Every structure is written in structure tokens, then in C-alpha cells.
Image 1 (tube, rainbow, N blue to C red):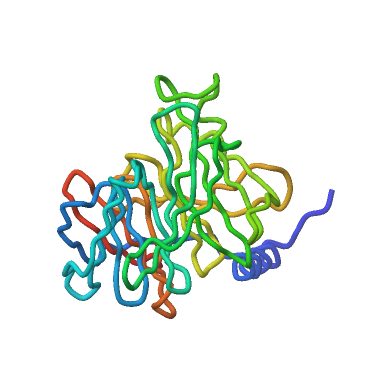
Image 2: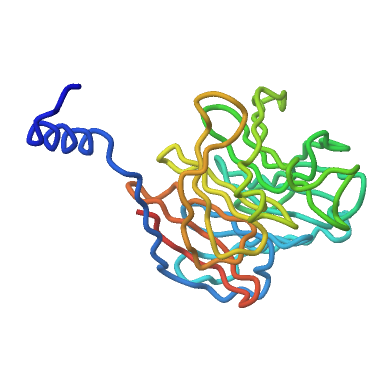
Length: 268
């Protein structure tokens, strides 16, 4: 049996902790905006945030929350916009027919400047479930597809079938992952409602109701996303957005539908 010198062991552990520091994040609330339409999700760009609510979108100034523009898709049959993300001047919104069965989904595309509807991509009867959020990373689309428990379940499936699917820019599937069991339990009986990639390469996700953000990353092997941590947050689940216009900071936008507010927080 080999006995290690305590001083050498202590020195080794110090070096190890320096090379591999414990993962630690904090979330600090910064600001709230009163927006009566805040019920589903929020998107954000350099100058504005966009409140997504079933059949409508409202555009607001980031400085003071002032209403800039509105879009109403009621007459076009849009009934459940779930979330949105602004990329290169376009607002991409996840759209579904929730709670109807069979689940159908599409991506609806808007000019972020005018909110004019400029394009669509239909998944039809979605193979993976109900589209709740999307984001782009490293030249690919990452899309969250939800499944639900109880009365909202589909074809005998439940929340365990909720997944993250990676597509190329032509909407061809590349890879897919499922969520770990502990998050499935937290999502239930609803599902994963929001998600966004941070500049740190981590994926930030939400459920339907809880005041929490779940930090995940893609696994080195296998098919299950790795849950790193849970951050208490001033939200009530639903669609979130990360402000990529602010260098050196991770600013998270979310909503509290009970208070009809849009919240801004910093993740450090």
C-alpha cells in the first residue's frame, strides 16, 4: 500500500481545482416592463423586444417598453405562437396547433423592423411533437418539440417523448436528443416551453410554469442532454430569449404571465 504525502496531496488538489473549477452561475434580476400581452414568450434584438402571444406579436423599445408595432394573425388562422428568436433582422416564431390532435407545427417568419409576415416553413403533422421554440447555432437550427401528459397527450405518448432536434439550414434532420428524467419530472404534466443558446455554448431551457431556468449542454456521447444546473429566475416558465447584442454579458429576457411583465436578468 502506497501512502501519499499529505502536503503533496493537498498541493495536487489545489492544482486540480484550478484546472477544473466547479461550475457556478448566478442570475440577477435587472428590470421589468409592464406588457399586458405578455403571456407566451419574448424575443429580443439590439434595440427592441418582441412579445409573442398566441395570435399576436407586439414590438417594444428596450429603453422604456414603448409600443412600436403590432401584428395580429387571427384572421390568418394563427392560433398558438409559442416563442420567437431574432436572427439577422428576421423574427422566427414557433407555431403549433396546441392543444389539437394530431400535432401540427410550422415556423413563421417576420421582418423584425416592420413585423410584416415574410415567410413560413411547415412541418405539417410534426414527427417529433409540438414545436415550442427554436434557435440557431453553428449554422444549424435547434428546435424543441414538446409532448404532454394527461388530456394533452398524443398517440399514447407523454412528456418523456419531448426532444431537442438539430436541423441543417434546409430543415433536414441531423441529430436529436431527449431530456434527462429529472427535468421531465419538473416539466410534467406540461413540457419544455422555451430554449436559447448562450454565447458560453450552454443551452438555457424552461418548463411551462416554474420560476426556473435549466442549464444544459450536449452530451459527449449518447442521446440524453446533460443537466448542469438550475437557476431560480423571475419568470413563469414559457418562452425566453438571450440578448446577443450586449458584448460580454448574458442577458436573459423572460415573462411573468401572472403579472403581465417582461423581465430582464443577467446570468453571471
